[in-house]
Every structure is written in structure tokens, then in C-alpha cells.
Amino acid sequence: MSKPIPTIQKYMSTSPHTIGKGQPLATAQALMAEHRIRHLPVLEGGALVGIVTERDIALVSGLRDADLTRLMVEDAMSPVPFSVEPESKLDEVADEMALHKYGSAVVTSNGKVVGIFTAVDALSAFAELLRSRLKN
Image (cartoon, rainbow, N blue to C red; front, top):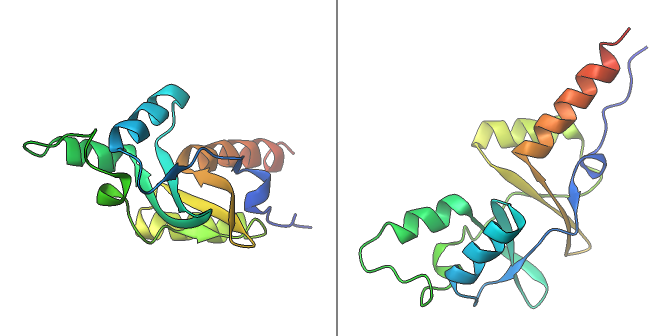
């Protein structure tokens, strides 16, 4: 008898740090460094409007005359983040992330960000599933 596939809700990081699209990139960079994270959902008026990653900031900061205190998050963010509902099946989300090389999925419910599921979370889920399902 096979076990049901778990949902993202079981493995996502809840209450992720977020940032406003009008914030300086330097603020995003500092927030990521302080909390040791690589992805920040970007909000405008509480609604998800993008995602900015450590890689996005590194790319912009490598440009000549780039001043992260003057450039805003909206200048570097991806405007269409991959988002899923908490009830989304783990395998389906992992397939999409792998197919499109997404580093994360923003988890939303009723238009609000409720979590984030990253590649690191996926590896933790993989390890747990291997231990629990292959133990017998």
C-alpha cells in the first residue's frame, strides 16, 4: 500500500521574510545576509508582485556604477514568481521547480504569502521521505 504524497505545507518555511518593491536593493541584501536566506518575496500593498534573489542582487551589483542604495528591489526582481497553494502536492511542485530551474516557490493562500519552499526545503523533504519510506 503506497502512502499519499505530502503537500508543500508540510515542508515549506512559514512566515518568510518579505520586502517591499520600493525598498533599496541594499536593504534586501542586508536582510538576506542577516537571516541567511537567498529568496525574498516582493510585496506591494500586501500582494505578491515578484521575487528577488541573492543571485539577482549579485548580477546587478556587478554592473558598472551600480549603487545598491539607489537601485530599488523592483529594478532587480523577477516580476512573475512561481507560486503555489499550501495544498499543492510536493511532487508536482518539485517537478515544476526542476523543469524551470526555479530556486523557490512562494506559497500563497487567499492572495497572501504564507510560506516559501526552497531547494533546501526540497532536499530536507527528500531526506525525510527516503528515511521514512525506505526504512522497511
